[in-house]
Length: 397
Picture 1: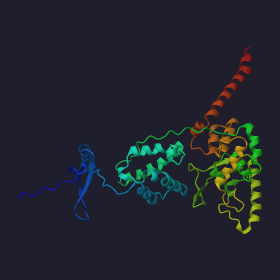
Picture 2 (picture 1 turned 90 degrees about the horizontal axis):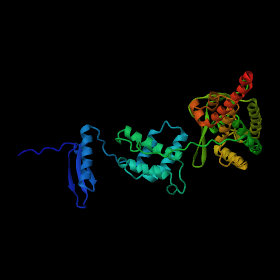
Picture 3 (picture 1 turned 180 degrees about the horizontal axis):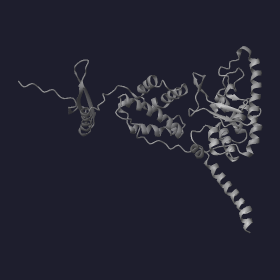
Picture 4 (picture 1 turned 60 degrees about the horizontal axis):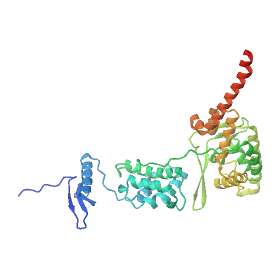
């Protein structure tokens, strides 16, 4: 009697089921633990569709690129990604990832099998982020939508690297265009009103120092007393205060600067005078607080008990001040933009401004404040014309 030939891995059969659907069965190899074939099924509405899927699987098995189907859903995989593969993230970044996965990715895509997730589904998800009806009546900004997409993309990238997926279905998505933000500054006409409006505020000195140095909010909140060189009139910026909420509690830690590079900026004597006033104020606060004083990071700007200022509180106070002078559409970064604008308008070269702001390149500074450099070029041309009229032409007259 002839021995029945064993079916090779990758071969399969196609049959029609009683429910009208078509089914293909195939084997992908031998289970080393049991010695039995590893069998799988593919389902589809038409014989042609199932046959196409079977040919694709057979080709992958033959070429060695076949990946055994995993049982992860998108939600389960993203939680695994968070728990096992994000140990190098800073606490603030990890907290942001958790919020993105919990609030956006899991509700929309969580129940889908990881290997069934496709580009069309992800594209629909990205598009929905910018629609109010899909986000509790509030559409996400294009920038925030791209951040959500970025977390999903990185999670799927890892699934590819460890063999759970053959390719990243998010890679072909079209992302919303992020418009270039309009630069808002405090004008010369508004400056006096701003200074008068913020004088009664408890964070008055903080706002002044930021306005005259251009520091980012995290940088000025993370400025410590040893970072001030009183003799040479400079500030050494090497850390920023990061904060995130956990069950209502504000957690603080020090992080490196945005581009990872420290910098030293030389400041105006007025800035040093304001910092000296702040030191006297803090000394009085420490005496009043007594044993309750706790300035763990030796910060320049703290609350009455020496603890780090809450960045949201500082921001809300500033927004209220700006609104009082008709600048409702401005924010904390407006102080930084104002410093850059005043610097350029008063003759500072782009490289100096770039170094003071801590930009990664002069090209970025030029791109951000290009409208100012255009005005400066016009002023330069007018000065040249005046020079021509008063010297060259007058001599030849």
